[in-house]
Image (cartoon, rainbow, N blue to C red; front, side):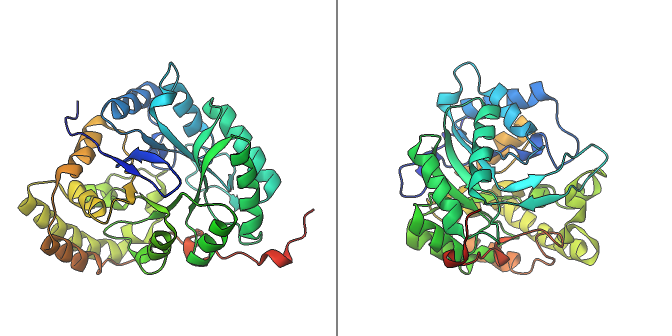
Length: 349
């Protein structure tokens, strides 16, 4: 059992309190190779809760649907009251198979779809209310005010407690927040993905919105370095990521070696160092590293006891600024182009 006391933080300014580190559950059933044995994943989730990691992150598209179903089974028997449960809507996906690493996906923020997706997630999760409900990706064809209007109704009806956005631009965040308070924005933030620091994170802080950092370990690269690339299965989606390929990968390996040296100096692992860097960004930041192994979970929790001084932070940021390759494969929607049409253009059908 992990012995470090996991602190609690206030996420956003609307009242949500979560563990300072969360658990990303996606890899248990989706995208990173074949799904893991369900009993093992349920045991891992229970272990996380008993260790103080109570903020669980999933989505209807993970599987699709299998991740939410897994969490429902894990949270039976009175476990539901111990967690802050976050799920997402907005990415419509065809059914993936073990032999198909890419699937057809579309983005939807239509009010009727928002409501239907929420009802379906409530049923799969076997809960009466979702703690934090994110729009997973922004529908660039529907004004964000329209989508947020429906989410506001769901809050008023008690189906969700708090509203979040994922991969949203600064202008989208502002417009959404004007309709109903946004509690958290989930974005990719790590030592090798720092784009959000330019505009998104300052916007969140100005508005009192919590920041949830996904892929805080660089999709595993910051914990395993070159080994992770060598061991990816043919159905692992990371094979298509530019930072894992060719000259980019060779260059980034050298950065990992530099991070490893800093970690050795601090007496921790590279993954603990990467997570500690995020924890030192502020008390409004909650990283949600994913794992399927208890030993990795314990290691992640250990990052909370790693103390970094200004000199350490500066050294790490100088290394991170040299990462090569786009963070997403071609065609994947990100916050960079997530603005929506003005509300005046909307005509309900």
